[in-house]
Amino acid sequence: MLSERELAFIAIHKDSYPLVFRFVRRRVESVEIAEEIAADVFRVVWQKSPEKRPEPAWLLTVARNLIGNAYRSRERQQALHEKLRAAVALRFGEGSENVAVQDAMDRLRGQEREILQLAYWDGLGCSEIARVLQCSESAAKVRLHRARAAFRKQMPANAESTAQKMGA
Image: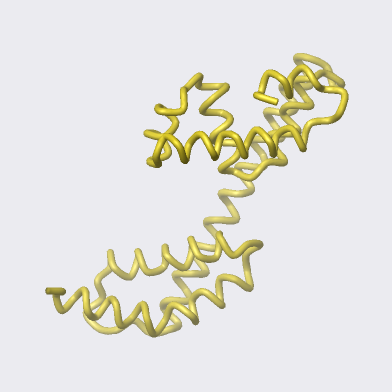
């Protein structure tokens, strides 16, 4: 049996999710990010446990703040990638295969980049990757296979040796 608080939360979510999602979706670049931020709005609602039903303006203010956090996080991530690329270029030269790898990794989606880093940078096997990602081992193998394929597509044609090392 659900508690009164849980029933109230379900009602708030049912009534307000479309409004919150539309608000967020207009301000972010992907449906996935919009879904994640909209879900975070309702996480905040649950944590704050308001005595009375939150007003739509309050929900949208929370959404706006979370969108700002997401943009700042993305900007920090981009700055880090640029810094890493510059360090690789400085160490190995602009035309090196290491720079090509860094550029290819930067063009991947976050999940693809993460699984490749777990496999190659951190040296984890599929069973360990599955535990880190909290998925089955077969799902980890499929994700790794897809990430490798995406990586190969991003690598320049003249960087065959690295693509082969990445399971090509």
